[in-house]
Image 1 (cartoon, rainbow, N blue to C red):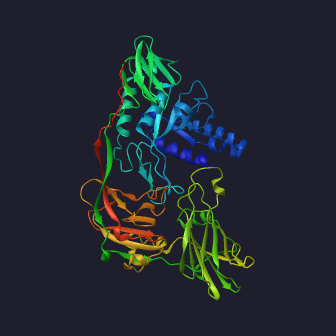
Image 2: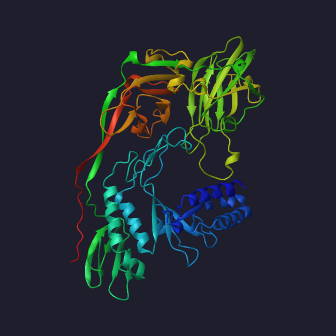
Image 3: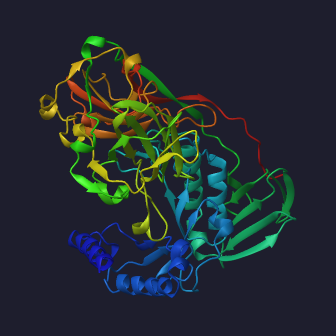
Length: 569
């Protein structure tokens, strides 16, 4: 019901603007579902039935352009099954019907990066090799994912995914050329376009040139001939004979011969200059007098309105309106408990612990395993004690079956004593809940709401612990270069500029190289005024805002690559 309504609405919107190619518009393909085959088996016979239903429903909308299903080998006619990945020239088994073209709908130029993870660097040579191989093996269409990087503004990133998205794309997060990737692919596209007539009209054949070497040939009845000479050996060059000429093929390379004789492009020979990102600090926010701060309120059980005798699931409470849920309780300490330890189990993503308004610490999971345990030694008061636990999500789950059944948040809370048979088990205790933070509810990141709380003069950052809002005013840097905030001295939280969230940050979550996964956070020029721009930060775990810098981002050419040469002998 919902799927049909949504699809019908989107198609109707496209038709109303004459956007389909059948109406003279630019849309040449429509996609229904995405990589559903990855989860289809989880639904047993209903999975295959759904695929057939979705295909029929889409086709009946009469868009006038073909429909595709990505990574769906059983896509029903006339829906086209397509490939997603990095090596579709090698991995794609081809269309499931002879009347369908071979389409590569997602050529991953990199991969999304997660907190704690290193960026995935995919070389220009590797991308070009697999594009050329797909065309050589009768591929008809290639779409890059992503060709232009981007930014997950606000809370739009999925679980543990950093705010920057596909920054390693040919056009980076800021829309700047990442060389040599952009230039090398541009030359490849020009070479394929130069051969397009023969690729479309020629008869494809292939012959072996060696153990790991193959020639893919497209030959027209009269005149035109194009050849792709492929060396799949990743370590060794190879000298091959093709049409009575000798060619030296570099390791893992494809040479494109526009006339089956002269090489017009080689995937492993990069002629584009490499460039480097240039970061210039235009402003350091080191003036104590300019900063203001507000400490968010730590609720106790009496402050809450939602009550339950169980630990409730996080996402079902937040409804994606916030990352935060407070779990609170009060209890009477009335047993002998030596060396007590607060023990918390959570299914993600982060948890902060407070006892009697004193911060104890935090713990977190990661992309591969969101489950974690937090253990903190505590000092209990005789009589009543208050425990406040802040559960934090860092994005919603992005894929998999039965997403509606996913569980996040706290699953077990206890206080352990050194004597094993004495402990407090609060898992099925009476809990009080608060969804979100006070600063969020009041939207104090907006200029018109700043006066809704009392902001204090900035204090020594060494005294800062958790859940502090900061605000400062700044002028935009001169020029047209892209702008970013360097938050490398902060911990974890979210940033707003002139009321717009530029995304979550988590610079304290380091990679195996002991570096933040992301420290620069994109501030679009369109959000900035010439002066009096408002920056608001919500900091969860500490950090020093006095060392934040406002940087401009550009790129410059550096040096030429050194290449092998490839000429017919």
